Image (cartoon, rainbow, N blue to C red; front, side, top):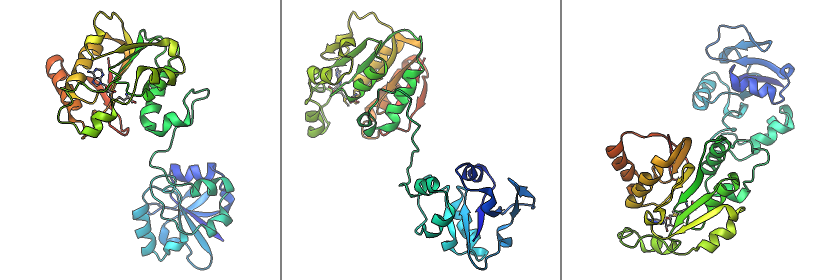
Length: 316
Ligand SMILES: C[S@@+](CC[C@H](N)C(=O)[O-])C[C@H]1O[C@@H](n2cnc3c(N)ncnc32)[C@H](O)[C@@H]1O
């Protein structure tokens, strides 16, 4: 069977590196080629491909829609196309892997059959204390935290979370920064009723369902935790600390603003404050708090993340 590879870029190179023998490749296809060769094989324009008899076109490019159109225009049937690059990404156009079994190395075929993922995960960090369960809720948020913590090095200061609830994110901070004190600020009885007025009853009630003991039981290094129970910012009074890593996750405007006012001046250079829900349309008070802080103090240096609830990573 003749094998054509559509594409002469990185994805085509990856395909060979993934185990497709270059000797199997009849030619590469490229709609903009002037001829020549790629990896020692000829490069043809798609209309130059021999479309008689048995052949398969491995599409190693992310421009799938355009390639599907061009292929149809050159008489290459959809059933001859195997979209490889796209399968490694967002959508799966392939319905028949029968021919692929004949030509692809088993590892590549297995990768192709895996459900497509919107996010291709980073390889796990060797020795990471994070568990599958830690990563289940919000992969991007937790892996970003992991990378940030790994990069803190000798940035001085403690870690803190304002808005702990049942401690699932606090658990990750504590696991990733086992040497640092971890301040945990929460009422552990839900929101300030005055501030939460207008929020849904279910949302308010659900956040009452926790306790400091529940959180401490979850931590791998509870001896590093300092519980500051009660309404913030009163619970921070008298605290003289610098911080290397802060998670601010209180959902509502006034408490978020209080958190920014307290923690940002105490954040060490090289440290980071992760503000949860900044790009969460269901909690618009968080963004309003940032706007008020910026109106008072000037523009923040910050990177928005594409995690589930739109965290803002604030740097100093
Ligand atoms: C969304 S939950 C935190 C979730 C947690 N960070 C996590 O990722 O699992 C918000 C928490 O903020 C707490 N909270 C909100 N305003 C507060 C305030 N002013 N003082 C203390 N805790 C507050 C609530 O009690 C609630 O537990």
